[in-house]
Length: 461
Image (cartoon, rainbow, N blue to C red; front, side):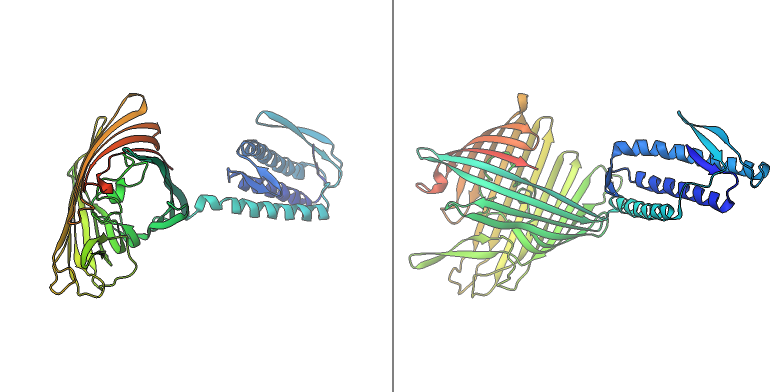
């Protein structure tokens, strides 16, 4: 029951209306947050919002009716006469009454000041509740993890993999993106090996160009950029030469521009990546009294011992949906510590194609180091590696996969031809169990000549 006085002054009536209006509007601002917020110690949930909204509509209707009633009373009723009327007010599905008496309003000055403080507190809370709608930053965590088992033919098996690779994304508006992948692995001696696969700051210049600075996966080829995570790779191992064995570039430290290439009204699409970086380093090994080049290490070094940069990139073409073909290349300088620079060149080509339940892909990478007169290893050095892979989805979430890879290296301990066949089971699109068998042909008696069974459980999140 609301009580107002016909004989009370217009100022008192105005204060009452102001109080009711302020409370209704303040409650409206809280309700408009439409989320769960703490209001003076109480939680406003989504369900309470609907009830609160209905209550506010009722209050607004009552305030309008009260204004109308007051205007009529001021015109017709004597200033000091006693009026005792009960006026029904219908608002929506609820009916209430407004009683006018000759008594003064029941809100004291102290109570009014207390209510004003409460209204200010509600207004402050309502404003803070709006912040989540206008956020400028987005934080996202993804990544993958895997556990594995391997057993050489005729040898003892071992659980050889426990890997966790979280990937962090932090984006400010549509201008800047920070992305980083860390890698935690269990070492053979029980220690924890920690590495940083990449960390870049990406400036989104426009729809077609992104500037990337930091350590990034090499854009030469496809596998290192897009296929190496364990939940994406369809076999428990990487193709020969495409792991961390140096046959294909792994990472780079420098600057990169990448994006899309407009193709007009054509159905063809294209993408590109170009970079400049510190480049790789030559690894050597001493056998007896002779020194040989053992490999090319390209893990993304923060140092540049030879002070010679490498530039390179990749261009990909998508002539029809689900078919992409790419060409890659890089050139620059490389050196053995303490020697002059020699030339370094990379060439590559790759393709991926999905049709029905089939997935086909392949890649070729060649790295060549020039000769240098007077060097401890004067001759040129060249490696090449390639693979082709096909997979097919089978009934009941199974998937079959077969791959052939060929790694050609001057070092016989590295050169290898390999067949791998596997069967996968997908518990979910991002949870995959794999079992595979590798047939390896390498240097007789060496590790790269041993056939092996492998099993892996991988989870992408």
